[in-house]
Image 1 (cartoon, helix red, strand yellow):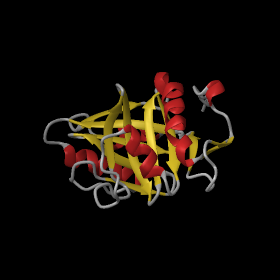
Image 2 (image 1 turned 90 degrees about the vertical axis):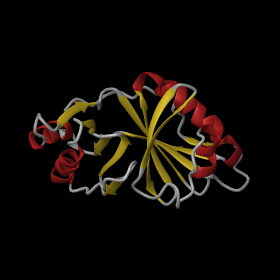
Image 3 (image 1 turned 180 degrees about the horizontal axis):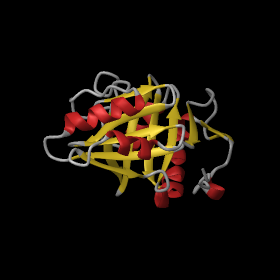
Image 4 (image 1 turned 120 degrees about the vertical axis):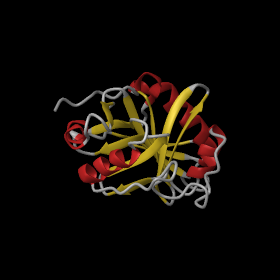
Length: 196
């Protein structure tokens, strides 16, 4: 598998930044998953698509909107009606999903080359994200495993809560540097650490 170069370039500055009076409120990391795939169901075939995702990843996703699951190096979540994003630290997920999903049930698109994955975690992660998105980030409204598809200034973001204070954000690769810079600016107030 060929490793895809980071689109962040000079914007990726490892270290601590911003207001560090109380320490870094968040940690921001560029993730490098081996696979990012979108799975879309044909009308009425959402159950078959969820079953294919479970058979391939071991992740069970309920029929609730935005439902998802996280387990070790894999995650999956709803990003729209009948549409799911599936992620694996290893490569080959799109191909594996295609072998489990019948053509009459839906489609699989490999997005590994077209998305950048960013994790923001820490006690102030909700605070920082609330500056950018009009979403209720409280654990009751956005529990671990669930996902959302939204936008900040026309930059589509598909996000999943992967821990109590951790969110994975997926943005178009062509907007990654601009989005990363915006996220870092939003985190300056609480202090942030960029992990290499």
